[in-house]
Length: 410
Ligand SMILES: Cc1cc2nc3c(=O)[nH]c(=O)nc-3n(C[C@H](O)[C@H](O)[C@H](O)COP(=O)(O)OP(=O)(O)OC[C@H]3O[C@@H](n4cnc5c(N)ncnc54)[C@H](O)[C@@H]3O)c2cc1C
View 1 (cartoon, rainbow, N blue to C red):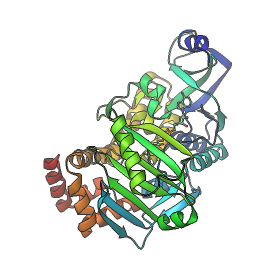
View 2 (tube, rainbow, N blue to C red):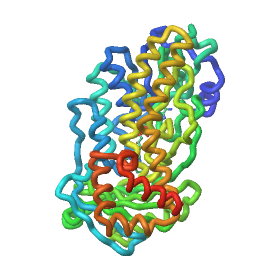
View 3 (cartoon, protein in one colour):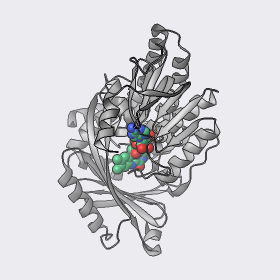
View 4 (cartoon, rainbow, N blue to C red):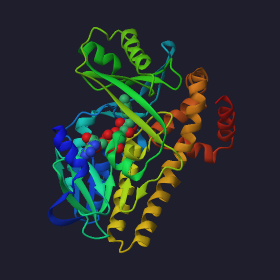
């Protein structure tokens, strides 16, 4: 886009394409947006899903699908799996390596372009219209482009607008809709990854097994996730430590003997965690997934947070679309916020406490998960989805005491 047209996007009044008003417009077709569009279309509403990329598009991500992600998939959707994980090799910055195994699948691995394209297909099959290659520049809830108080204008890069009764912002960690809503962040991380094609002998060595390395930078960790004929190798650490984070990734790749293989993709992406008091809506606009800063703070697991919050956002967007006045709109938006806070919010609260302690004492976490059976079992049950860290803390007094001890570490 030229700088002239970019300037026009931000300042000139938008023209509605044809005066048609959608019930729900969803911005961004990652797991959060596809899930929101699926939920709203399944309720029989007219739904438009807008995505700036052409699909399938690459997304920097390990593609780890834990139990709660699987449970939040649209009914009947079978994720295109690259592998099933039965073993985890843990190391502490390359040292004290130990592999733990499980008879059951711990979690599953997907390639994000395939997975996300499949979710968009499911949303389309549920009745959503999908437009790709369309960048949203802003939303307007009043002004010349907005015909009445029940309508939101979603302004596109070409200066036109589409109209909606409700909007779901699912546009990821650089979210424009999140900025409109005023999302506040407690923590931002930078994730770096390389997709490394490997010969069959190396692929075989990694099949069914992942590596998790607790990293040298406070709060960081690295991973190897096998994807059949390639490995996704990545690291994550607090934003602002770019050089050290890159060095950590290079060291991890070298240490694993993978430096001789040329990555097909090397990329980086931010992840962000909302602060406890961050808004989840403004007027007729809701946010979900990374756009809302909904992410597990310790593991940075975000796919289940995107799918679960996306589905809730789609369901509540339907109710907002039907709201006839500002009071009803506000009530439905508060119901959405309540549903998020009661579920994902509680999980994030426990995750924040784990992260604070982990950042100070990664060695304690390593010793626990590699040496203590209950800690490994808790890890395995959480990844399988039979419980969550928040649920363990809620139902086990001993776990509550451990968490309080963990707080003191933090
Ligand atoms: C290095 C790394 C590894 C990770 N590994 C895992 C993992 O193994 N497991 C896990 O659960 N989570 C992981 N995560 C987190 C996970 O990737 C995210 O939480 C998840 O992708 C969030 O989904 P989303 O739909 O909210 O956002 P996204 O997947 O980012 O989708 C947002 C979509 O919006 C589109 N968009 C953006 N702006 C606009 C616009 N203006 N107009 C139109 N469209 C727009 C984008 O093109 C994109 O398609 C990882 C993250 C990183 C950085």
